[in-house]
Image (tube, each protein chain N blue to C red):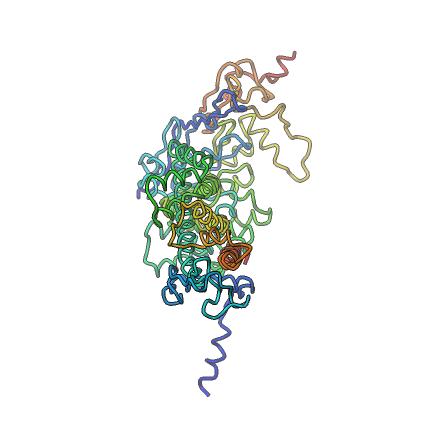
Length: 336
Length: 292
């Protein structure tokens, strides 16, 4: 293993789904992910935020190779992702794992926890039978479960304990990459903090790189080294978490950040106009322009590219790059 | 004295998942099925007469309870054949057919359902077309055609009856495997790098087993009844061979004069199917850790 360098590189990922309206309707193409590029270094965490339906979970699955992109490519540790289901792809699972949103659904309810945590070892033939039991016990302890809880069935554990079991299973093969798809959104608020801290601890302990997919900005800030904001299948802003959260450059990120509730601070929330757009009917130009408070006529015509600002922040916005001065918003302009 | 502590510690060992004893009805069901299996296995030893042996002097003699003699405990039929002996041999034939056919149907249906769910695309369409074809074709016509063309043998009959309910298992297996595959544990296990064998054998099959077992306990009586129907039409078990169904079929003509010819196999069918249903129900609950 080489030190440093990109562990995971994704370039121009596109994933389209065909959607049919009604029984005889024409199939409409939906671009769930539309040209996403990202880079993740060893032992680092990239947070991926956005509203529901913006393609962040699909990006997670594409990056893991659970789905094949329609365009673009994913390379892991310098090698191109093999075809899903092939033997090479299966062998690669030992190096990259996923943590799911719903831990009860992700666990087989007919097998005790210890068996399931040990299953990746069995699949990839790691260790002898006797060593595996010891390894399972170490893993259970690492995620904060007692070893006697290994004999329990998933339904006999609490939500937080289940998510810990899922984490233990994901870490069994000591993977280099962990994709966490909304790992805390199904949990209680008090448990959320525990699991977040656990993730940070485990990353320090195992040196795992993480792609952290969430709609919770504060959770993302807590674990991430970099944050990417997604809107309608594209990354609109990417940078250091503190920078993005304190002075977001893209108008969408600004609205997202202002939606975080702060005690004692009121009256400065940006409420977006209109509904999230239909991904089957993507607006021209910048996809955000119909809802953007500072949109100009240029935004409706030309799609802004994701470019670096002088301070290193990547933003896809004409206004943020100073190519055009802030407008009054597209919808209001038309009405006027 | 040194042995004393050992004696005490042994029973206090944690026996967390101690199984409860099955309910009385299930014990009865298990007992009855065991009896049936023993009868089927030891038919040659247990039967007092050969099933074709005629005793023309004692035609239509009643069973003991209706004033008969110990010579023929369950009476005789119109040709003086011993009903008990014929019943014993019939149990052997019918159990073979019913168990064989149910297992063949479940195995074929589940495998095809899994194949469809795993490969999707053309294979799925082909399996579904076959399912629809099989569901829309009257089974008796298929049975008639097959038995008329290929002659009649016990093996063929078992295989044919096995095809009777396969489409039900195929539909269940495909639907549940698809549901498990898109969301949840099967997708998670796939993400761990498991081979399809492991996903379907270790995870999906045990999870859907309860539904399949219930389906099997429903199909089992159907197969017995279907076999009797076919035998009655002269397509199933051919005389002088005998089965529970054919005994009922031929006994029908003497229903008013000698009801015992029909009652003995009929009550055997009822008790056996009831036992299978009871055990199936109990197994389904017992196999599910969430219901324990």
